[in-house]
Image (cartoon, one colour):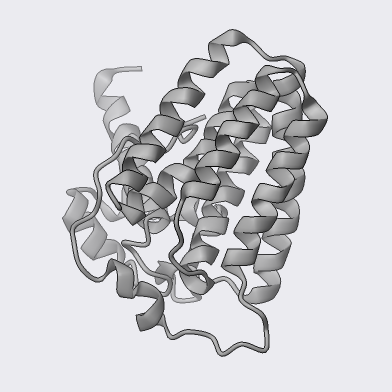
Length: 246
């Protein structure tokens, strides 16, 4: 394949990754309209390329496309949110069990580096980056299993979970998450699959608890949810782990 043939694919991947990152950091809020012409102008790409990127995001449940083909950031309902976390807990348990059962010392370095990046973001009070890195930790684990199908599903389910947090959740200190990530690394490195599964299951239950307030509680308005993100520029960061094109 010639270099020129690769350009549209590369540009489309770049648009997909940029939009996905913006959604995961809540820079693009739920219900935000995503007109193809405006996105094309922003990225310097044709509507065809933009449409393909939006289709990938729609397949992951991060974008909704209406009957008129207009797209917007998805706004998951409560029933869908509960289903997402039920599936996520099962997938996460499978991921850590696979790693614990086939642990290689080479896994420790990228996991440790990611945890350190999370700690820096938390120490800097960079909430948007901290939340995204916390989510991408789980994508990294799936990537290390070498199972491409598992990685695809984890990549999708983690993205949806982050979107659910943007709609229903509240800002919170990342100290507990960091400690649990450390404990998870220790359990997997020790080959203790049962302990690793228990840690990640409790961890995801905790995320779900923060994401879904009780049904009898008055839901916060979109303005209230997005208030922490109303000032400041989008945080810089590397592309999501495991998001490379298949």
